[in-house]
Amino acid sequence: MTASAFDHPWLSGLFGDAEMGALWSAQTQLEHMLAFEAAWSQAGAAVGLWPQDQGDKAALAIKTAKIAPADLRAGTGRDGVCVPDLVQHLRALVGEGALHVGATSQDVVDTATSLSISASLKLIAERLGALDRALSELESRFGAQPLMGRTRMQAAVMIKVVDRISPWRLPLHDHQNRIGALMPRVARVQIGGAAGDRAALGAKAQPFVDHMAKSLGLAATERSWHAMRDGIGEFASLLSLITGNLGKIGQDVALMAQQGLDEISLSGGGRSSAMAHKRNPVLAELLVTLARFNAVQLSGMHHALLHEQERSGAAWGLEWMILPQMAQSTGRALVATLELVGSIEHIGTLQENS
Image 1 (cartoon, rainbow, N blue to C red):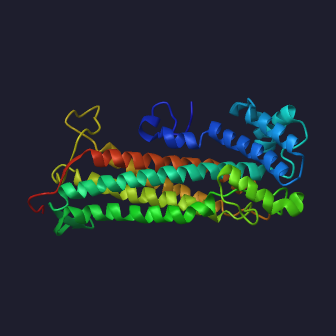
Image 2 (image 1 turned 120 degrees about the vertical axis):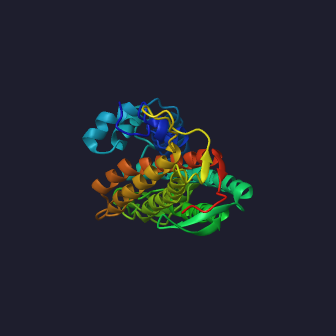
Image 3 (image 1 turned 120 degrees about the horizontal axis):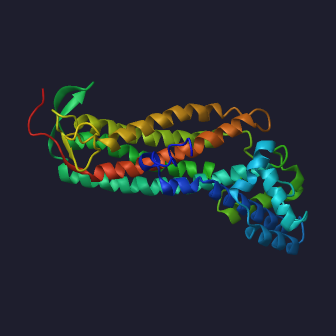
């Protein structure tokens, strides 16, 4: 049994997004950490920190290692992070040699997180594009229809359907621009070593970092960002902005679908266990819930900006608890909005509603 709604046995039917969830799963995080360790062994050989054959041998052993996420549970409870236990498992296969020399746990975990963030942003951008196209089609079909404009939820003056849809659609373009600007600030390798100064890598530090970044498909950095978490906070802010935009769509649709207004017709709808005549706007309501969830979580991510001195354990752990759920909430919201828009059979009214 799980307490998370995103992979709960039945709540996941409403909240779950298998594709986004997979990007943040324990198995994927473990694969990212192993990719980091293999790239580390090869980067050291490439810049001359250890012999090429040692680096190749270590990388091969790491890539073929059979480690299950559950194998790291006890060690994480003891050490507060899974990497010491992971390195111990790998050392039994690799030996001392070219394994993890000059790295620290935060380098491994943060780089693994960066890989998940990068993949998440690509998925989000793809879904934003699909939603933009769906809303454009909706405008083409119904944009010229009359609709009662409402201010403070009271009837105001007549508008067109396009006037209601435009505030749904236009922010999607801004989100795409934000993703383009954000990607190089968050899809970046983390390498700092024990205290964040890369001292153990000596004069080879920057060539080493550049090699790691290229191997993992991430951006290189001139120094570590162990205690500079603004990029992570900015990613969380983007997630909340997107779900807020989608929540506005859900809120509007739920209000338009109220009996007596009948400004929108939706196919499907949720059943009631007590009232057979009802068709509840479940997807619209879900978008409001997910928007509010991410807005609440964003506060926690901004608390996690306070990484004291050269490394924090408390703030770092808070990120692990919150960020994957925010990403899954955003992924699910995009899928739900696409489903909701696809279910719209008509928008507009032929007469004013008082």
